[in-house]
Length: 265
Image 1 (cartoon, rainbow, N blue to C red):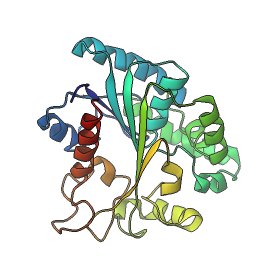
Image 2 (cartoon, helix red, strand yellow; image 1 turned 180 degrees about the horizontal axis):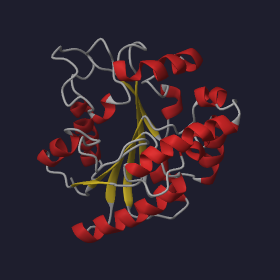
Image 3 (tube, rainbow, N blue to C red; image 1 turned 120 degrees about the vertical axis):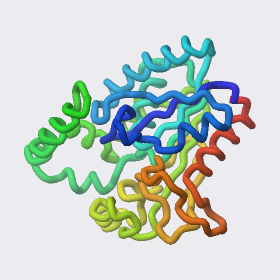
Image 4 (cartoon, rainbow, N blue to C red; image 1 turned 30 degrees about the horizontal axis):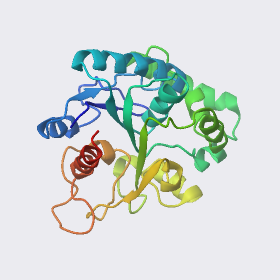
């Protein structure tokens, strides 16, 4: 691959955890000959703060690799953080931005859930922020982040952060086949199913569309692909069965790399 790859994580987790956010993915990409870097931004900081962090992180990578551009693969909110860095902060050194289940158009579910009094949201967010600080975040703002993920906030964000003509943008969506497909995501999946229908445990495919939308990726398993599966949370294939979908999330990342190589990125 011509340019290095920066993996940008989503909300709620950090790159430096012992468990590892990206599972087997970095190793597989390195085995394919890619130079792979992790972003390291705060888990629950605002898009503005994470965007500023990512600008500096990209500069570090450019210096380390002596290259002019990098490719970015972002999961969930990480895609918004990078879009902000490119558009509002003027980051010029991005060749491509690939987003996997990034809420580019906002969440209709949050539109409804956030109608409850803000004091209740902020009370719960206080304890979540405390946990994030223990895990390493410098300035977690969980309540603020939640409000920026509504459809109205997304519309405003998209107007303020138009795509750069110098960057190739593409996006993917994934879904579970039922709310009970992933035991760790049953409760949020049921909630989102009630408001928006099929989802990955957090987001519906409709909310993830941006740029060159590659569609909804299917798996050959009966459970589909959850939000956690997208970053290889279980560290194993979905199934051994052959079919029209993918057997292992690594196949998606291999396809992304192959497509970027074909574009000389």
